[in-house]
Length: 426
Ligand code: AMP
Ligand code: GLY
Image (cartoon, rainbow, N blue to C red):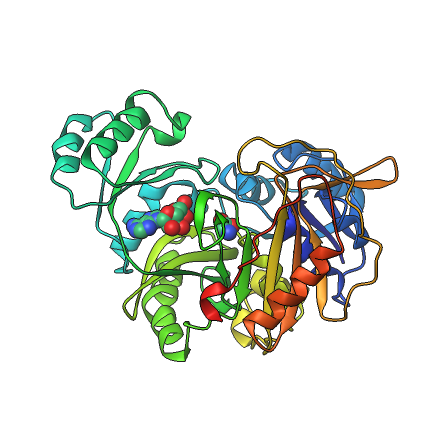
């Protein structure tokens, strides 16, 4: 079958790599893709939110499976667009309806869903212009630190952890009265701070059945030892050493099952990934957030560990046979280290030539492109996060060492990567 994948990051390169391995994949198209995805299919210069152009592409290329990488088209309703259009109804879409995508697109929606279904999460209240005044005394008596979240999508920047009441009230005012995050902060969730260790758990579901994919832990801060500014993700490891069978059983029973049953009970049209951003407090899992897509850079370790055919999984999700499938995982660790542009996550320049991509790779390493583009026969940088190098190993540190060896062979002006991915597992 012919497949269209939407997106252009490291996640999409890893998905393209995996999709292209399936016997069921005839032609793969990626819109818009990057310099890496073109190794596995044809990049097409169509925007991920131009639904009319996506439709034309699907009809022209005889696409029967659409895989949506990022959240934006889902939150804007690409799945509903396909379901409503007679010419597109036969296409299997991996990605939830606009209503279901609110699990990621609205923090307040997600919190209410969790409360309705008894899913463990931090205590919270929501505020908007109608109860703005009430929020101030609420903040002033709240235990520190206080977590403030813009309700809507804010490019990963909408969560603030405030260490003082003065700071919390000031940020609250900026969000609600001065549109700090635009429309995304018209509503604000104020939440109890949970102290624990984070991990990401992924399922593929059709809103009734689900399969659990390998879990992962990502490293969000720019600096060594998890310090400095937040980024899109500087590296990831899978499996997660502290997510043992007992803990994962709790995750399945207390988080995954009530979430999927909640989707079913509420008749929410949801075929796609659920990314559970979890925190382990003591031995208990709590949900920090839901995302309606795979994580990046987590996908760059999850796909390499998934042995099951991905197209088969997607078709089973689409035709209601996901319950018959048993996921097979590579037992080894997969660790990815992300090379980023100098200055990221602040301002950075683009367009630097990446050297070393033609050198042979060790058998147990993979290079996934994130922000790259082709220009005059060269591969150049075109984003903050540029390359994700994944390696397999029998320990976290042996996998990370291999990825760093590959990164030593690669270079571009200003290239930076964290030396200490997986540091707490040595
Ligand atoms: P989010 O955008 O929801 O992923 O939040 C960004 C980051 O903020 C999370 O990955 C956590 O590190 C942190 N965070 C969010 N909510 C909480 C919370 N209730 N307690 C502690 N940390 C949190
Ligand atoms: N790595 C976190 C995310 O994709 O949101």
